[in-house]
Image (tube, rainbow, N blue to C red; front, side, top):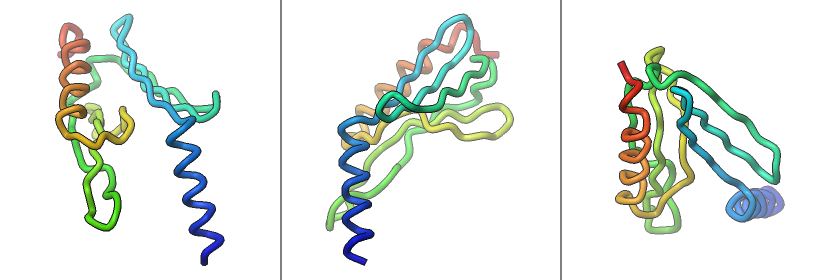
Length: 109
């Protein structure tokens, strides 16, 4: 059990140090990319497919259960796509969601 907890702690530490999320809006498309040490996945879809942007609790940290906030995109097909790292302050996640909204607004239907 202690070995598993050690592995999880190590994985979380490595993700914090070397993991990244990137959202780009260009050519009427939204591109969400997550990567870890240069390897990752990219999702691309038209801006018109974005139905909603949500700021939600992504996790709880520590003994007090302090929430971490993430930004999620909801497509017109109902798919939810995570688009951010975990923020400690909800205000930061709300700012990012507003910036994404501002960038895609001209091409949303």
